[in-house]
Length: 510
Image (cartoon, rainbow, N blue to C red; front, side, top):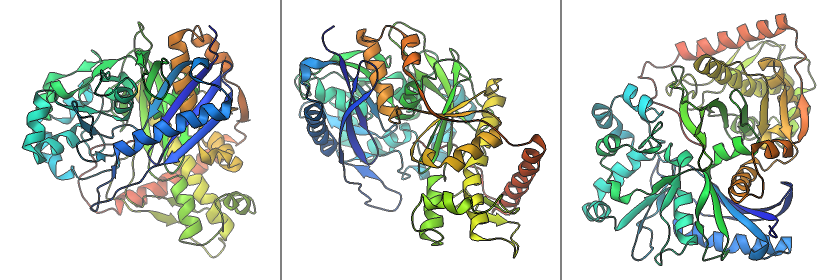
C-alpha cells in the first residue's frame, strides 16, 4: 500500500477538527474550525448542520496542506462525532430541515412521562441499554415529527432522512443528492434508544413507541468497515470508520479487552469500561452501549458512566470564588497543604449524575472550620473529581463482575498531576496517560486504518499505544478508608438534604 496516512475527522460539540496520522499512529497535522451554538429558548441547544459540513470542506484540505500530502497519500478516512445530536435533511435537495437538536437539548422533557407509559424502563434497558431521558436521540425525533405533520409525512416515505453527525457527513462525502450513502455505525445507533443491543439493528417496537418511521433511518453498519468512497473533499478515499466520540477514545486508548477502561476528563468526565462480547444491563445507574465493532467480527460492549462536574468545578473555583487566576494554578495552590483539612466538596450544582441520578440534589461543602485555607478548598475541589470517579468505577465493578486493574485517562484535566495521583490513590490502581493525547481522533484513525489493512489487527494497534505518564497508588489503606468515610458522609448529607423529587431517568451524553 503506497498511501501511508490516515485522516480523522473529529466532529465535536463546539468545533470540527481534522487530524492526519502516519502509519505509526503519530500525529502529523491538524486544522480546526468552531461552529456557532444556537440557544433559541431556555433548554434548547442547536447546531447548523450545513455550517458543520462547510467546515469539514475547509479543515480537511487545510490539514492535508499542513502535512504536505494529497488525497492520494491517504489510505482511509475515519470519522468520530458528537453523539445523540439529531439531523434531519431532505433526500432530494440535501438541505437540513431546520437546525440540528444537540445532545445537550432538554426540550423533550415534558414528553418523557407519556413515553414512559409506552415503553417502561426495564424494557428499554434490556433492549437498548439506555434509560428514558432527554439525552437520547429518539425522544427528539418524536418531538420533531409531532411539530410538523409535513415532516412526518415525508419521513414516512423516506424523503426526509435522519442521522447523527457521522451519518450526515458520510452522506455528503459520498455524493449527497447524487448517490450519498445513508449509514450509521453501531456505536452511534446504540445511543439513539432505537437499536436492539443484541441484533445490532433497529427495533421496530421501539420505533413504534417513539413514532419514528423506519424509512427515515440509516442502515446500521459496523464501526470499522467500508462505509463508502468519498467523492468530495477527499475524492477516491475510502471512508473506513465511523464511531461515537467516547467509544473512539476507548478505541484510541487500545482498551480492547474486557476490564480495560478509560476516562476522559474535561468539563465533565466520561468513563467507559470494556465488558466484552455481551451487553451488561446495568442495575447500578450506568448505561450499556456498543463499544466498537470491526467488519465481520462480533460487537464489543461497554458500560458508561458520566460525571457532570469535573473541569467545570475548577472553573467555578476560579471564576465564581476568584480563588485562582487560571485553572492550572489550582494544583499549585492545592500543594500548599498536605491534605484537605477534613473538608469535602460534593459538586451537585445541577444534580448528581452517574451512578446516583439525583437531579434535585444540590452541592455542599462539609466540615468547614476556621483552620481551612484556600489550599484546603483547592484540594477538596480536585478530590471531588477523584471521588466521583471512584463512585462510577465501583458501580461498574458491581455491574460487570470485573475488578478494574488500571485506568487510562485523557482530556484537558490530565495535565493536573496532583489530580491524577489522587485518582490513582483513591481507586488504588495505576492511572496511565498516553503519549498521543488526541485519543478520539486516533481511535477513528485506528478503526479506519484497520478496515483497509494499513494495520493488520488489534495487536499491532495495542503496540502503538505508549504510556506518556503513569501514576501508581501510594496511599495507605487505612488513610484511604478514612477519606472514603468522609466522602460518603458528605455525599449522604447532600442526598438527604435534597428536595424529595423523583430520581432522574438517566445519564446525559458527552
